[in-house]
Length: 161
Image 1 (cartoon, one colour):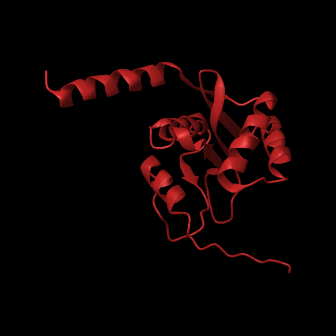
Image 2 (cartoon, one colour):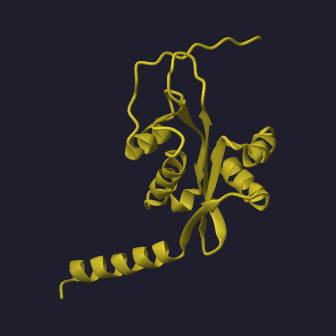
């Protein structure tokens, strides 16, 4: 057996072990502290995130999932379905929150988490959107990997300074 084949077999075994201990489930209030820790690792502490997640967990139009590995929360994804949206006839699903611990990125776990969120929301809508900054190439790549495409929708914003 060549060295390359042996390495591929080891990698396949390691990936199967990871998949066997990886789970996606609905988030609960007990998951909020590790979600906040992940968010802080990725983007800094957001003082409003805890209350936002808490309200989403109580909202029938919201979906919030966590990814766990060996029982520890390693990622999260959340979204909301809006039945009435300006200029739209059908409900729209918005992906509003995504995060994955850096050690678990680029392993397919984020894609599984994103796909599960979309699948959970499919019973309510068939179109999904998210808002991203132009400089967030990492998130653009993630959403492209989920099948999202840039659209011709314009975003207008007003800020009171």
